[in-house]
Length: 160
Image (cartoon, rainbow, N blue to C red; front, side, top):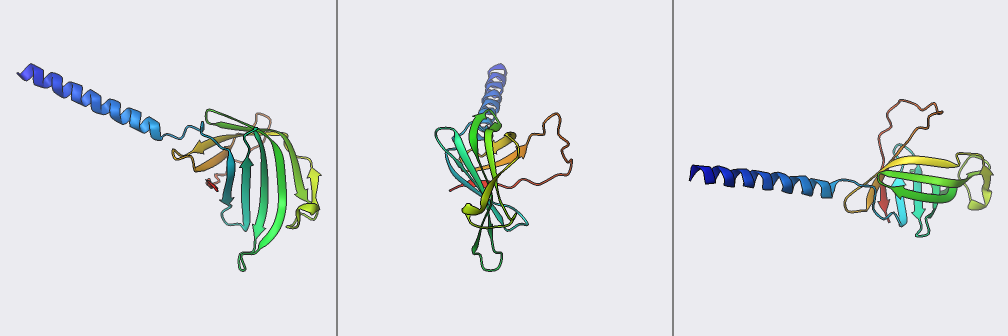
């Protein structure tokens, strides 16, 4: 009787561990979700909004706009980039990037954007929540880049 009780207890304990392991895995942020759609983030301590639009053909558009902190009116666009993207495991690769910036380096209409020299590809670690409606990006510093070691807290993009 004692032996069967120990066996039942052991099996119950193993079942509980397996349940917890698999349920925890299900909730992990995999970065394998579907990014298709529009994603918006308010940049902390800033009047800027950042909007990514990921399309089903693996192209994307990223715009940065401003909002007046008092009146909440749209100030216009300051920067834009277009390119292609690939999502694999927990990494988001943006490539074939064409960058635009407002010619006056301030907010204005999209017609004031001019092509700028910038990165042609960018890699991020992406953390996508289990519901697939929120993610954060962490820039992956390249081997020949001097990246700051200052910690910048993540901000989140929310599916629109």
